[in-house]
Length: 85
Image 1 (cartoon, rainbow, N blue to C red):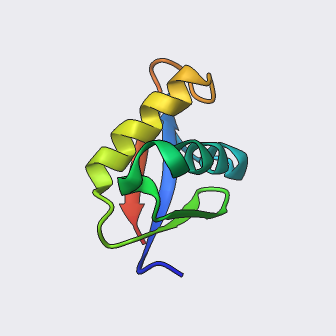
Image 2 (cartoon, rainbow, N blue to C red):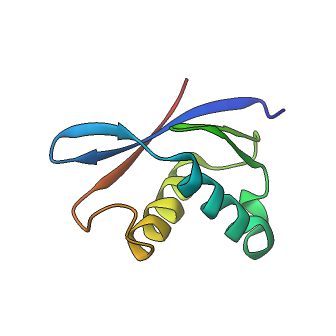
Image 3 (cartoon, rainbow, N blue to C red):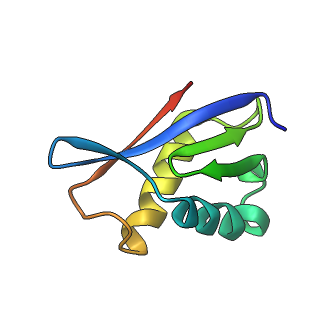
């Protein structure tokens, strides 16, 4: 649907793990009405999203990481890793 496909993983104690689909969906639905720049995000499966061309990857990573920390999906020291695939 969108032009870019990205992997969404988090680093937990040196191990990369895919973010769960329900986490990605929670973020996308939350931002569906709160921040227009993230409207063009579509969770596909665990660790995989499609995003539009205008979505800035660094801003997306930062916003998702903040949301995942606040929801306790990932630990305080865990970091999110987004990469185009």
